[in-house]
Length: 110
Image 1 (cartoon, rainbow, N blue to C red):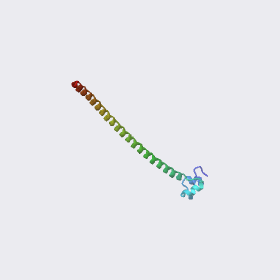
Image 2 (spheres, helix red, strand yellow):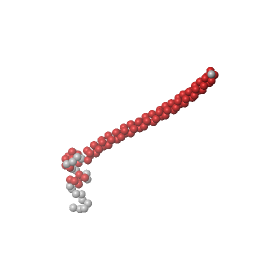
Image 3 (cartoon, helix red, strand yellow):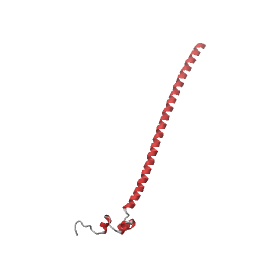
Image 4 (cartoon, rainbow, N blue to C red):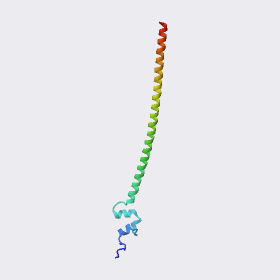
C-alpha cells in the first residue's frame, strides 16, 4: 500500500464521501454509531435558538415599551407638579390679597 493511497475502510469512506449505504440514511447511521446523528441535534439546537431569539426579541420590545411608558408618566407627573405649584402660588397670592383687603375694611370701620 502506497502512502498516498486511500485506506479502504468504512470509517474512511464515511468521512471522505464513500459509498456506504447509511451515508444517505441518517437513521441507519445513527443505529451504526449507536447514538443520534449530529444533524438531529443541530435541528433541535436551531429550534431552541430560534425560540430563544423570539423570546429575547419579545422581551426587548416589552422593556422598550415599558421604558416609553415610564418616560410618559414622568413627564405627566412633572406637569402635574408644576400645575399644583402654580395653583398653590395663586392661592397664596389671593389669601394675601384677602388679608390686605380685610385689613383695609377693618381700618375703615373702626
